[in-house]
Length: 417
Image (cartoon, rainbow, N blue to C red; front, side):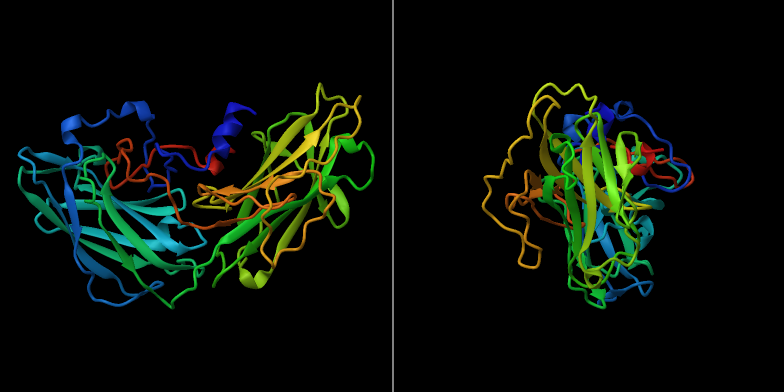
C-alpha cells in the first residue's frame, strides 16, 4: 500500500487529525510552523459555562440561546488562552459548518471576533482578540478571569437524523487544567431518536463464473441506517486495496463494470441524500479480480477497505468496513476457504451469510470494532468521537479579517484533487 493510501485510510489519531474547513482567506501552514507551548503554560486554566437563556430546546433555523463562558487563571503568572469550542451531535450524520450558528461577545474580555469550522464529524467554534491573529490568543492576568457571552443556535439544515447537540469548551493549546473543560447539552425540537449508519461486507465467495477462482472474489457491501430522520447530504464510498494488480468491478443492471481509480482509491456511485431507516438496506455487489500477469508468488491475504463519508462539505469518513480474502498465484490450486474464528453473528435483521464464504469481513469505525461471523461483520457508526480532541493540538493560524484554519490530516476531497 502506498503512503498516500495509508494516510487516506487513517480514520482517527490522538495527535492532530483536523480537517481544514474554515472561512475564506484561510492560510494553511505545516504543523512544524507552530511551536509547542512552554511547560509552564500548560494545564492552569479552569473554564465554567453558565446556564443558557432563554431555557428550552433549539429548533432548526429558530431561536438561539446565550450563556456566559468564564475562564479563570488561579496561577500566580499571566496565562494565555486559545479558545476552542467543540460540538458533536447525538445521531448518525457528521456536522457541516453551517449546521450550528455561533457568536461571541466580550463581557470583561477585550473585543472579540469568532469563526466556525469542522473537524472529523464534529463542529468547531473559535474566537480571538479582534484584529489579531488567532495564534496570539487572550492573556488572562494572574489570579484573574475573563468572561464572554456565547450565543448558539441550529442552522436550518441541521440534519434530521441528529438530535441533541453537545458543546464542550477547551483550549487548542493544552492550557486547561484536568477536569476544567465543561460542556453543555442543547436539546433539539423536534426530539430525535438518534441512530447510526451500519455498513459491512458479506457473501465473500469465489466468482460465480468459475473462471480462475484463485484470482477472483465476489462480495456484497451493505448499508443500513437506524433511528429517526435521514442524511441530508449524499454519501460517498471509497474503496482501497492493499495489493496492486487487482481490478475492482461493480455489478450494474446485471453487467460487471470496472471501477476506475484515482489516487489509489475507487469511488462507488454515491448514495443519494435522503438515505435513512425508511430506505431499507442497500446492497452493492462487487468483485475483485487479480491480473493473470500478476507477480504474486504465494497465497496472499488481501484487504479491501471501504470508507464512507458525506459526499460534500465535511467529507471526513465516519464509517468503514473491511473484507479479507485470499489470492494465490496462477500456478497453484484455488485456496481453501478460511473461516473466521469469531462466533458472533449479524443482527437478526441482516440476511444470513453464505456458509460457503471463503473470506472474512471486518468492520472498524470511530475506534469501535465489532467482529462477527465467518463471512461478515457490522459496526454501529455515527458522529460520535473518541479522538483525543482535548489533548494538546498544534496552534491554529487565523488570518486577519475573521479567517480561521484547522490543522491536521488532509480532507478526502483535497486528497483526491
